[in-house]
Length: 186
Length: 417
Image (tube, rainbow over all chains, first blue to last red; front, side, top):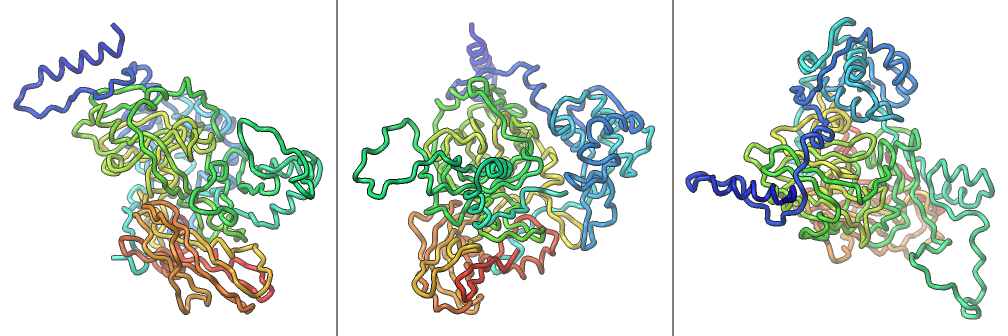
């Protein structure tokens, strides 16, 4: 029996065991295309890490260890200390968001440390995305947070500690109120 | 954070100059600029009377006349990361040719084998599924003509000031998109009661990830594989992309490979930082999705040259992420008086709408503006109104009325952003 047939039979069984008194959430597929992914396939692609850290893998790192990773993998674009604005400035700018010349960096603007981890693992370094180990991602994340004065140099970042980091601009975001301008605004 | 997609230096003069440059310098300049140019020496001069010689043979795939080789203008640093702007000053009607559709990419254009490409639907669904392109194309499909616009289009306050409409407004385009309504796919896999958001991810090097509220997803979002009657262009997401009608370009995830149903937004880079926009009080507006009503005159526009006083048809484009364009007004005297422009039928919701107005130029300096009203009654604001409410650092989502100054010598200039 093919995988897809097994899947359809399983769906049918689920349908049959559901009682008439409860609404059915598991309805049969109308089109029956595709196949169920394996757990490995889902793990390989479901890489986005939400603020509570769900899905963060084992591993750990500190800023002290991350400095070498940063120097080797990141400094060419972001500068030795992460303050080069040529591409994305990563460090500094805290206290500037209300000024005429705001400096939006990870330290001054980003909302969640998990976003940083997730993005580095998936998309960095620019010319070799997805090449860092989990330990390297934890370490270089720790280094950027440390350079921004958010954590200590020896503080260990892992699946438990990273989601607990409170970013300085965590509460700086508001929902979109548009329309807010012109004759169409409320 | 600096974003190279919004610093266009394009101008008609720049492009023309590049076209006429010769040899290796021209080629490397063209490659650096990313502009598709006819190679020097390739084109034969056209005969004086084409009726007196046998024409060229049939061919499997056409191409533009060499003399009509308009191109996108690219602003990128490095070359894989940036934007490529649609020449709105030269496009006609409401459909943007696929090869001129604007492009924004942050990790290069991926090379994807459609035989190997898969779409994963996972998370809070009854039946997670992995679909091939062949399977997706068997499902019920639909085609819709819809605009896309980067929220950084007409971005405020970053030099150098663009000269042309390609530079000021070239990060919008309009295509007929064909694909599967996502609601059909999701109903088929069974959305679980706790699902509120959808995380969509692309298969490119940056893995553009965006969280979208389920209500919008079930309303009108498409999983698209077709663009203007063909497969998507690689620049625009081949073989599969999300189309989210009326919402900022970035959520229309290209090279789509994953849709995961979740209970909350996942706060990806682009939603928690990149496309959140800063207000004067230091707060940032987040989940700014809809592209509000906007219009721009494409002829006459910046960098163009009028041949002298007389008749000109003023032409432009209007669009609204909230639905239909109801009205476009045009002013030729810096907003003192306005006249209704005619709208080209069919006027379609969340699509570019072409407007036109007859104009007799008297040869004196004139400032041309257009102002659109959408079906919700929303009227396109002035730049002063936008800046008064949002300040100078709310650089995205600028939909202000745009001004072109026609000088007495017929030259046309950008006098704004």
